[in-house]
Amino acid sequence: MSLKHAILGFLSFQSLSGYDLKKAFDQSVQHFWPANQSQIYRTLAELLEQGWVEQEVVVREERLDVKLYHITETGRIELHRWLSTPLPPQDFREPFLIQVYFGGKLDDAELLRLLRREQTAIEERLALYATIYRMNQAKQATAQDQRAFFLSVLTLEYGIRSNQAALAWLTNAIKRVEAGNFTLTDLIHL
Amino acid sequence: MSLKHAILGFLSFQSLSGYDLKKAFDQSVQHFWPANQSQIYRTLAELLEQGWVEQEVVVREERLDVKLYHITETGRIELHRWLSTPLPPQDFREPFLIQVYFGGKLDDAELLRLLRREQTAIEERLALYATIYRMNQAKQATAQDQRAFFLSVLTLEYGIRSNQAALAWLTNAIKRVEAGNFTLTDLIHL
DNA sequence: CTGTCCATGTAAGGCGTTACATGATTGT
DNA sequence: ACAATCATGTAACGCCTTACATGGACAG
Image 1: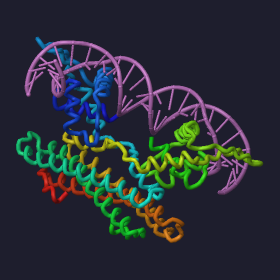
Image 2 (image 1 turned 60 degrees about the vertical axis):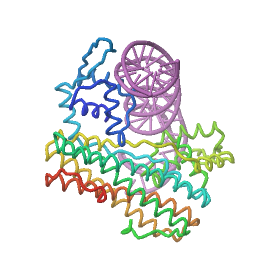
Image 3 (image 1 turned 30 degrees about the vertical axis):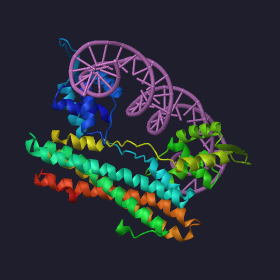
Image 4 (image 1 turned 90 degrees about the horizontal axis):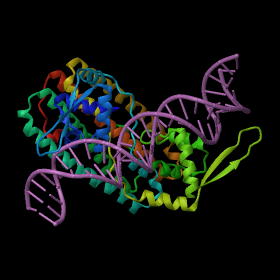
């Protein structure tokens, strides 16, 4: 379960509450590992049982209590073990591609609507990623660990590159559908 | 549920048994929508309940019976409706990127092993896709519906392009880690 | 005084995977 | 003889989502 290890990863930097963890996910790895609140709390309970984290109840005057989670030594060992262990091949599911695959059932207008809608969505995502990337460039100088910082931003670069590829694919597909040119291209040009 | 509609898609071409459907998935959309056997049988039962398919029990001498599934008129309408309906934004999960994100915990040798392993896996996948693409080029001339054939191959082109992007990303990442160069690049070059 | 943020959880449901179960036919 | 292919299912489990439930503090 990757969520467990992602949580361990965050806790290896600093102790956090369930609430803080949710924010940490949303602000950093959301684009490749969204996590919802209820899932985080449940997983935290499992991590406790496994002894990979410890809970500290911080009682605050005039505020609700916070449950701070600390990574344990066995937790750090487990995180390291997982990080250096090959993952089983993942499968990939993309319902949009099912729509494309059976797109022969649609007429040209419907098909182009489908493709252009996706094109717009990807363009918007790319614009967002570009903004985040620039923010990261700005704060790079202040990062304590340049190497770790670089690796975290690498995942954003992945998002940018793969969305650029998807956009190029879509733009090309739209052009071919518009032209009614259904011949396959040369592999080298893909 | 996309699996339902993928099944309807296949049945819109020809009536098939659960067993045949499993083969159809494995031979065509597996790279973006793997389906396993038990799931197909369960989903077929749901499609029956919904009246989108009909079951015909084909009794064969000296062979086990086959349950052939036919798409109904309401099934065709539903398929068309789904194909032309925008999908809610999908979330994307890639555990490998979690390993990269927290890769600062690994030393250079471990990190490079992680990245190179993924690089090899992607190269192998690309080689496989290239072979399948060439097979499709060869059979293109014999396809009855050129447009529908083109759209089905488009999903393969997507697979090729996105894996090429992932490969370029990895190759570049490996180079930067080897050089110990952790500065961020210019966005235009991504 | 209304909404947002802080903060923690439970319950039910959906979709998918793995393992189990059965049995005939065809190929090596 | 043994494995693979044909053919259909059930049971249990895992991970994730959505909705529900609660309640104080603070800002506009």
